[in-house]
Image (cartoon, rainbow, N blue to C red; front, side, top):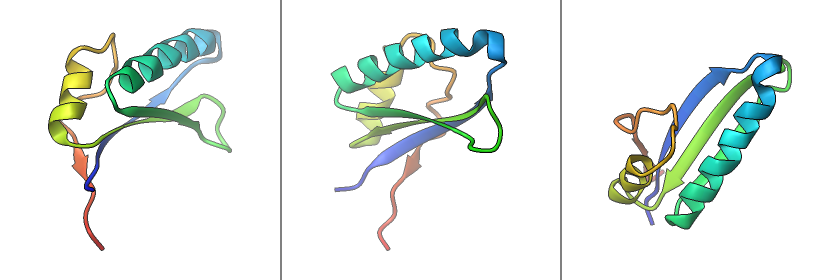
Length: 85
């Protein structure tokens, strides 16, 4: 089954780290409640450098999750489709 995803890179200053994590937990719950996934990864060599991924089964599902999401910081117009290899 084809999948789609978005990604966003962000730098989070140390004083904002807990607020970022609280927002990320909220987004994860939101996306999961709509049949999508949400992950956050931190650069192993650069504390505070994060990349966020959201994945859905199709463009419509992922777009709908973004439309109803609390502040996401990701442009849902940049949706990547999985390609068959």
